[in-house]
Length: 364
Image 1: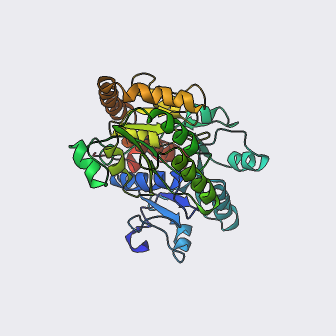
Image 2: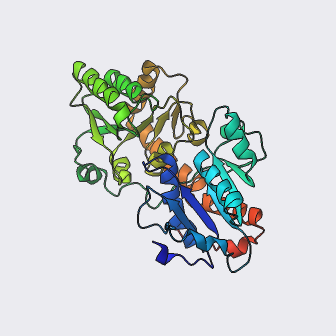
Image 3: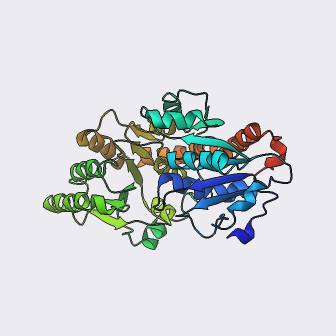
């Protein structure tokens, strides 16, 4: 959609070099419209993005040789190794006037190659303090925020359940994300087999896609659930782009990941006034307020998860209090406009611009 891009005002380029939907892609999709709403000239480049976003076409990149009207370099904001490399190629091979920014969500030791790429960046962002601890260069922590207008409590919970085809007379615990061992889908299923056994008024929903490499994992998991006699109580509903409607339909959310970079799902659930029980991976311990908006699990045992889930299943008043606290916590600490503000400051600093030239007060 190059016709929507004014290259005189284009300041930031957000590459997305992965076709399949991922957490990084979701972040880009959520941020760009809000960043543009503040007056920031930003466009994406790459595949796997909706047509509603402004995108640089294959035959328009040459216009990047010209500087914006303020005569200062543009910012290339990478979030993956391939995108850091793409920025380096654009700057050093094609000689485009760019400043390079990288956001890291990884919580593991980087390879020598990744460390080298990171050292070439002009600014580095960490999505959590845990992530920052793995970086060997100066960095700024900017935690992800959530669009609290899109992700919000439903006006009518039974109607929200009905709208996605779920029974209105059941309370529902959800687990959303890719179906695979890394995401702990099997851990969630095992915990639900325990917790749902004596609670006929509850059911569980697994929303997300199993890629081809993980189809056998999903098939075996479905057989395991069926063997336990729970195929009507633990259901798979596939992948949905309108996932906020599913959050609004559930009463409790579980994030059972065995590994995660950051993890947006607890934020999305809490923004919809849904308490969260999560493993201690990614940024989860920095997102969930223990015993206020939910629980962080001490281990990866299904029995531990079942115990915490059962506590909230059995106490409607506690769950309601945590639901309200979750929404309040999100509105106070994690609105996406806060992330937009922090990124604008970094773009200004790295490119030598005044913040006021990039950012006008966002209206939410």
